[in-house]
Amino acid sequence: MRTATRVIAISTPAARAIQYEPIRANALSALASGLLQMPLAKLFPLWQDTLDELSFRTRPNFLQDIKALFPVIFALGGEVATAELARAIADVARWWK
Image (cartoon, rainbow, N blue to C red; front, side):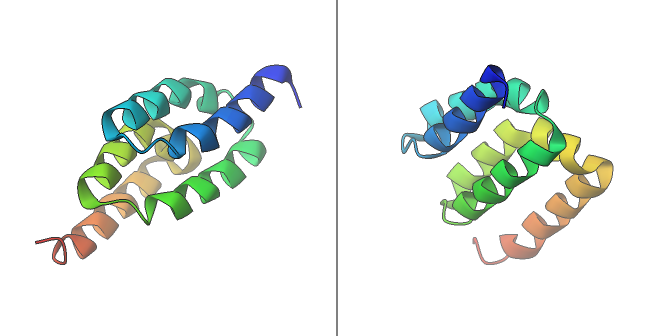
């Protein structure tokens, strides 16, 4: 694994673990450009772990994290993935009220 890819792979779980939402969102945004440079075969497992962590976030934190990671979502699945994400958020939004 190239050094840059290794650094991103190590940094991503660390960024996801940050509890203070504004700092976590900034860290995820900063990592997004690096994540986009990774081969999709290495990015996809990181994304699976990230989705698992996102499922435990509060609504505001989840939405902020998704916003920060939107470029990665688009890179992995294009318009289809982003449309599905929007539908999924709309589906669960009724429980957020």
